[in-house]
Image 1 (cartoon, rainbow, N blue to C red):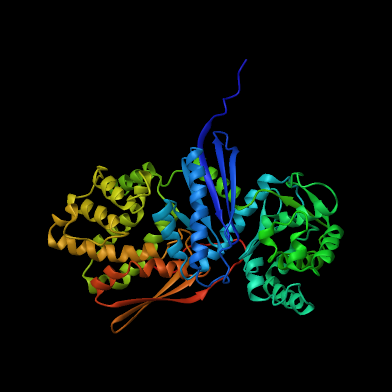
Image 2 (image 1 turned 120 degrees about the vertical axis):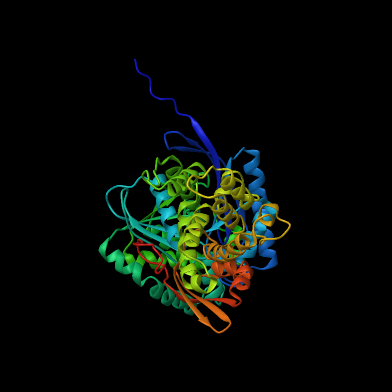
Amino acid sequence: MNSKPQKKVISRISAIDLGTNSFHAVIVDIYNDGSFYTIDKLKEMVLLAEKGIGDRLSEGAMNRGIEALQKIKTLSDHQGAERILAYATSAIREAENGGDFIQRAIDEVGVKINAIPGRMEAELIGYAVRHGVRLGEQTVMMVDIGGGSVEFILGNRETFYYLTSKKIGVARMTADIVNNDPLKPEDIQALHKHYRKQLSEVAQSFAMHRTNTIIGSSGTMQNIALMISGMNGLGTNLSLNEMVFTNKQFFQLYERMIPMNPEERLKVKGLDEKRVDIIPAGLVLVDYLIRQFGIMQIKISDQALREGIVLRYIKKELADLKLLPEDSDPRKRSIFELLRKCDWHEEHSTHVAHIALKMFDSFQDELGLDNHDRELLTYAAYLHDIGYYISHRKHHKHALYLIRNADLRGFREEEVEIIANVARYHRRSTPKSRHKYYSRLPSEIKKRIRQLSGILRVADGLDRSHYQNVRKIDIRTNNDIITLGLTTEEDPQLEIWGAMRKSELFEETTSRSLQIVSDEILGERSLPGNRTMDGG
């Protein structure tokens, strides 16, 4: 008798959702059949947006975030997690000093944070809900109410018809619109007016994919479910996943809660005390959605972004993908063999290469570079992050070592040195005479390394989030100033911060000052089409 293949654990990872109000972590074992099992969970309230979304994170908020992240890191290490995947959303992404927080997380905790765009957040939440809740062929509206943003997904068990993220989270609305507690009629009217404007695109998509069911995930929806559970005597030990309540049950809760002041809300069974101040905006939003879209019932998913992170990792980890077919060019073939071996960050690296080449093409003539240099810059951009294969710490130096010792075929020794050194100098220090691999090179090679590294450093900074936020670059030169005008999918603060902090070498080699401005923000939209950046 044939036995089934044995199910084996292939890795243990920790996935962290760094939200506006709270940080959620889940530690899971991943099996060779693509399933996963939750080993541990941790939730830490951080309230990053105490001064509003989009402003600077306060020192206290940053310290709370670092402290929470340290607790999660300690738990992850204790549980033997092999990798930590940390994804940040609107509060960190939009903050002027969000990049500083991300750098502190690396320096003080040893955790690298990826600041993802809202579109990707919606997609990952959709995957998590679809994984955790039984869906059929009928369309449902999945809604994840966070502190900074709210994600909307229209779809069923097989297809997502529409994905978007809107900046109407409860902490943002409380800070920006609500003026009274308890809410007064003018507060509710102001919220309704804002929701109506922000959700016009959602309403258009809903008209084409109607449903009477919302599936809600994350803290606000779960707190509403817990309060309805407590109000109906169902007990707080009830598993929230798949819990269903009707619009009438919600209306009863709404009518009871809206007149309450904070002290009275504190006594309501099921409400997290740290959400006391922000729950009114969430209640008004859910009430608006139910009435606007004719919703009859709400079902709860206890899986959200963190499980979506796990599912995305499984999909990428277990996929048997070939990056390129066999190529007759030994240079290209050996480069891609090294990339495959080192599990390269394909989307980020190809996007950085695209940006770098657009910049190269603009300054090639004045820098005295040729198409041969263009090819070497391309390969350095592809390879710049392969040092992660060894470890995050000093990954730029690991990249130098891997490239120099990879036996790349079809390259002269000086070409390998250029590729390796340009990749090495994509972060932190610029080329110095004390660096042994750089210092022993001929002066002409050093000059080319400095020129190409200056371009790569800025290009890498312009994808600081690793999620291809920059869609188009307009390069303008005026006397002593080079201006990069960015068209982005979402707020470009992180990309501008990332590029400007590494702009010194580019400014030195071009003898000009660099400034980076936002020309246009495309905003959230339906399922993305072609993600290729214009130009280049």
